[in-house]
Image (cartoon, rainbow, N blue to C red; front, side, top):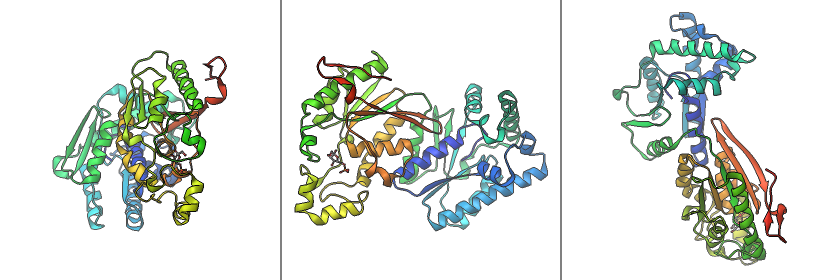
Length: 408
Ligand code: F6P
């Protein structure tokens, strides 16, 4: 990472790490600020960051190099992708990083966040800096003032990444413009798309399974069954929930899979909805349409293999959870891009994967995450995580009057 303080480097670094971990890479952020606080304590005032102060400059350089060493050791031992989260704001420092990476045979490119919009920087200082351990128990105004001084120190020596410094992605004003230099290969290109879609606007994401289907009643997996009567009632209940939550607000996206049970669940909403094949349920291959008992009896080896490693197990001529995550990649990019709230009506395995992405759970936990029927998971993504709550809808459904009410 490259950039002045309060330009969203840590946010960007963490988002990239999460995205890559979820996609199956061993990825980690190495944050120099955290290391500084752990080694010499928090609460350094702005003078500590003054480049004219030779003593503290040496300390900061040594701390940065310690983290770089740790990171290179980790990459050699077990990592695929490391994100080195520090200002790295001088060419001299970046040259030093490049020399170390080259010597260790590590490919490197820079992600630079540039922001000259003072309102954005100020908002970032207030949202993330004055609450940092560096300013614990301090008056917010004093803390913000000190942080602004800190930025000024870095501005004295800041040099943007030059075109002759190799590969870089530069995000200007939180993604309003993205510049790319000398980047090649699959992973860097994927990160360019990912970074083009990131934003910090407030919105909600609701995840819910379709209403109960006739296969759910008979315990069959997959297929393209119709909704059962209880599922139809859930569809109305969900429509009422969305109405109560958002009124007639336009600009709410409703996404379904291409399968009947999700499309029918969305129909009661009387809003346009977008069917995605990528949201279809895990493909159970030759087991599609069977019950778990039938699979165990007819194909005990398959049943046992799935029980041993449910995350990696791929149904014959079907999919594994790992496969599902791969095909959800465009859905994640679109969910990141949407500025409006989105309701996703899909299926158990698919929703487990989406939920794991937003709540930063290990991808390998996906197959076991609870995503009950007739219940909505409400996610509110923010800079460093995601608030969530679960709203069960079915118990509040009044069948007799065909009415639904919710305590929100
Ligand atoms: O049973 C409903 C269902 O959506 C099936 O169609 C699908 O195969 C299954 O859930 C996925 O859950 P699990 O991975 O736990 O079998």
